[in-house]
Length: 167
Image (cartoon, rainbow, N blue to C red; front, side):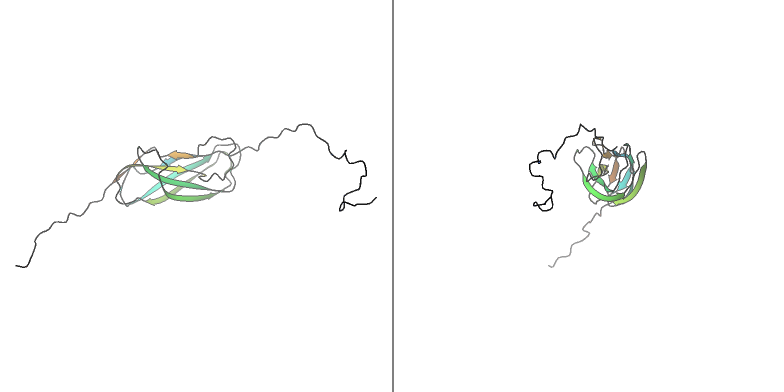
């Protein structure tokens, strides 16, 4: 028996019987994680330019383990706005995070100057969609239930007390 096709067996006229089809095979997806931000805790008041602590808890409410690394993103927006806000920090978490478990993180942020009013903080876990969450709903974002009332700092009040001019 010779092998003229680079090592393949030479089958002469018996080349039409080399394939077969199996019956159907059921494939089940691996149970997936479902990361959610359960709570976001912020102070009720703070002065512009001051540091505030923000605490959030992320849980895996899915059936599978969240593996790898993902990013929690913290943003700030004025109450009443509907946009994504201004990102004020990103933080990496490296799993695994087993189904039913959670982690809590506290970070400090410096508020911008020259702002005032009510602001809410938005925490988005797995902000880059790196964790397989199967058909879990898009529920990775939570807005703080308490708004931070940002007050203005005292401003200087410059007053001209005298003017001296040449005659």
